[in-house]
Image (cartoon, rainbow, N blue to C red; front, side, top):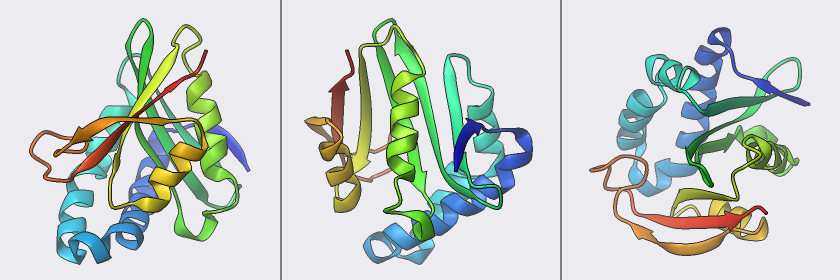
Length: 162
C-alpha cells in the first residue's frame, strides 16, 4: 500500500468507500436512512471535489493498486494549527495499519504546524481509542460534529506534534 494525493478520477471510488465505511460504523447508532442522508451530503462527489481544491489542504488516499483502502483530509487553520477533517479506512482493511499510515502523513503535511485538532463522533469508541493511542488528548465536546447543526455529538481532540 502506498499514500498519494487524491485525484478527480478517485472521487467516485472515495465517495463509495466513505458510504460503505459510514454505514458499517454508524447504521447501528443513527439508522440506515440518517447515515445515507449524511453520506449523500458530506461524501458526495461534488462535496469531495470542493475539498480537493481547497487552499492549504491535503487530500490523501491509501491505495493498494486495486482499491482505495482509506482516505484523509487535513487543512491548515493558522500558522500553528491544522485540522483533520476526515480519516476513514475501508472496513475490510481496518486493523492493518492504514489509519496509522494516513495519520503519520497528515501530521507531516504542514511542517510549520505544531498541533493538529480533530472532532470524532463520541459513540465511535474504536476511533476515539485510535486517536488516544496515537497521542491525541480530549479537549472538549461539541454537539455538532463537522457541520453546525449536524446534531452529531463529538469529542474534540488535539495533539501537539512538535
